[in-house]
Length: 114
Image 1 (cartoon, rainbow, N blue to C red):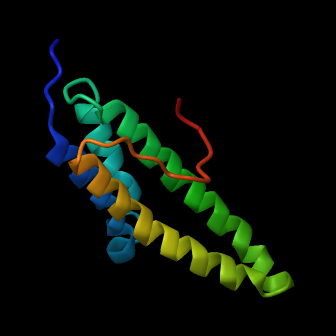
Image 2: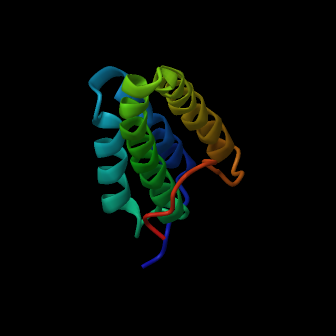
Image 3: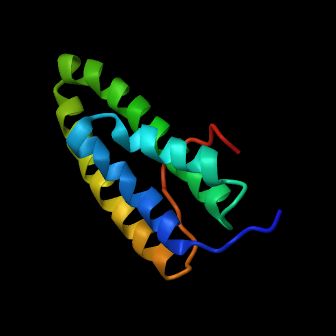
């Protein structure tokens, strides 16, 4: 099967992570559905989808780690703030990179899907 190039769909997949800000969980579900249905059809979708899902899982784990840190020493509040900023900024930066055909990268991401 021949893969088609669809940068717009990859951009939408990166930006769909911002649904977390509205729904709380859509930023994981929507990219997952797009990745599962399009990874074999769109060039670059498999790699982008894995990056996005690894990023979302990593953010979730980092958030879970911050909860006891809030109770123990209050530093978890700073951690949650940093995570919120990263969750807002990195998908936008990577969507712009994807639109320009540049490689995307989410620093600090644990590689669950390879």
